[in-house]
Length: 99
Image (tube, rainbow, N blue to C red; front, side, top):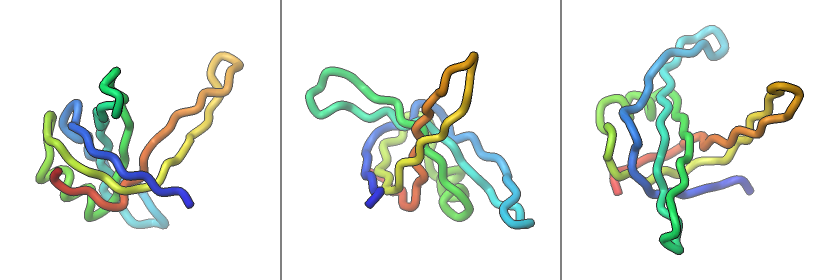
């Protein structure tokens, strides 16, 4: 099972754009969620993406500093850079709410 739940604050306003999915234009919102570690020894910055209705909600309701909870799945994107494989984690958000 690939499921993740996080609570944190946005580091900046969501970046909203459009993508083409099966010939239809869909809105996508991307943001970075700053999540405190349980042991209080730092913060992790987690990239998040949400599509369609969730992107509309993000665009209209959240901004830098807003504390939200997200539920989604972890995706690891791979690409090559200078001969090395780079692993880029991202949360694909299915639910988001004020926390």
